[in-house]
Length: 184
Image (cartoon, rainbow, N blue to C red; front, side):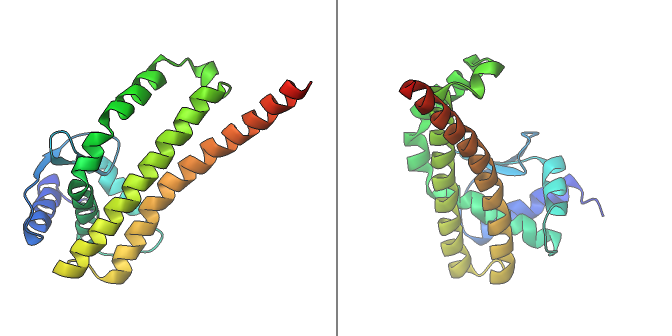
């Protein structure tokens, strides 16, 4: 069943109220199911992507539970806003470098690959921190069943880990190749 956007946003807004936080909510096609914009202090919901991501879960759960879990995860990012703001300058540098890099450079240039690995590692730390914070919120406010919480957490973190491992394998392969060429 296709949930109306207004119904999804209502669940997000209610969850924010349930944990006694104040964060704006906005619908925006970002390509990411739900994200926290730490500059504007708002939760962004991509309605099409969130519906699709829900369908990708390995184990079923009520749609509202999925939305509420993602919401408290994004609020976990909000709790870490100062660290996110402190990382902004480096994040901008990385984004600019990625935009300037030509497609051929991406898989062969070792400094570029090192920058990608750094970005992945930073993202994973921020994601793990947000999940720790979300767990604290959930334990205190008892929003989501623990089993369902863990399912969404595992699914979410796996997407970051898979992407990281793919780029790490490319980096390690290039590093070995470069080291071999340096010996010759």
